[in-house]
Image 1 (cartoon, one colour):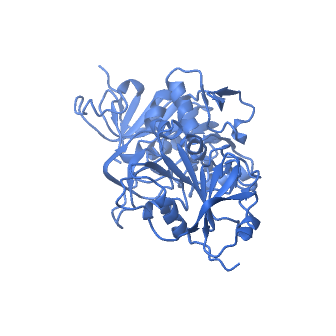
Image 2: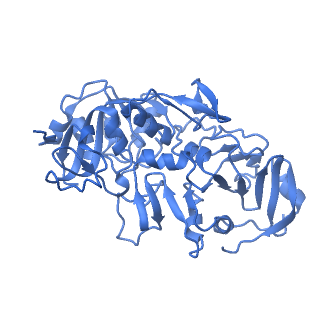
Image 3: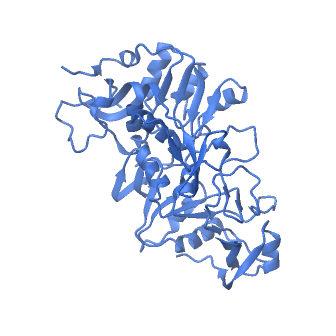
Amino acid sequence: MIDKRVASTAAAVAGLADGSTVLVGGFGAAGVPVELVHAVLEQGARDLTIVTNNAGSGEGDVAALIRERRVRKIICSYPRSAGSVWFEQFWAAGEIELELVPQGTLSERMRAAGAGLGGFFTPTGADSLLAGDKEVRVIGGRRHVFEQPLPGDVALVKAFRADRWGNLVYRAAARNFGPTMATAAALTVVQVREFVELGALDPECVVTPGVFVDRVVEVGV
Amino acid sequence: MTAARLSPVEVANRVARDIPDGSYVNLGIGLPTLVGDVVSAEKEIVFHSENGILGMGPAPAPGLEDPELINAGKQPVTLVPGGAFFHHTDSFTIMRGGHIDVTVLGAFQVSEDGDLANWATDDARMPPAVGGAMDLAVGAKRVLVLMTHTTVDGRPKILRRCTYPLTAARVVHRVYTDLAVLDVGPSGLVVRDVVAGLPRAELQRLTGAPLTFADDVATLSPAGP
């Protein structure tokens, strides 16, 4: 019997260790697993590395983890969103580390981790400061920079519906990083608006097959 | 100078005229989004948004906003019939993999070789942020820049070499400003259009790289597509 459903957001994030790398879905406010982030806040893990596109887009999401000094480092593409005030304050004070990654590279580094690959060469950023001292190769006459895989200890993802096997469908542009993050973490935790019976999701439309999912909690939003 | 600079919407009109029917297009945040508002309804153009949308439509009517249907600037948008949603890795496969026909980007600076600087200035007080700018710049088949010709204090933004950090090297094909349209050619910048009443010497004075002029330089027209 496979049943990945858990009864509460607290149960969903139980066991999160200090020092973990946590992949957090969302782009702007769309697709952010706010209820799971709140559960992490309650759970108390600290010294976290958070991988997410924006460094918070309001008081209630990753910004709250920063405010409560739970976050050692942010790996993201765009920390300057409206509402990411806590990040900017902590960054200016030197109290949080930032690793800035181009958005497509951020996603592809997690894809590589989930796909069992040792990294990839990309032209993105190869002529920029973000290439740093990374290996550069000319491939097809063009400069490419080597990027490492980016695995998580835990992924926190928001989807629309799930069955007890953890098969997922998403809604609109809230899908964003979810399907990739679900593949890239040792423990993938998903919040959904509603559970459905096994067999109720159209198999042609399942976006994340349950093999990538460990825990699912119904939150009603 | 007696010549009138074009308004942002007038420059957007000029850009829109160059986007072919049937194109897949990504518009950068800021001024480039104006192009989506003015492109001819007679053309079927599919707009892409980096957060996983093809067939992005205009802003919804007040009260019909969907917080899970937003554009790259996090503003509410709509989906046109035939539109599709997909995840981020697929979205950047579209961008980086050469599947976008045209991107229109804003810029701080462009060099005569087509180097693009549009993600960071020298202001160290702000945390750096890059988003999808570098992926778009290296991946789109055609990179168009829409920007003012000079900074607010009158300094050139088109230069021999960018002084701000590069987004990508040698990627810009054409630059549309409030004064001119310029192609990045194999031997430097070629002026295609100039705003009415602006002497060539004055355009050169406001540009930080040497200009050559096409044989058939057009008057930069503010009219729509």
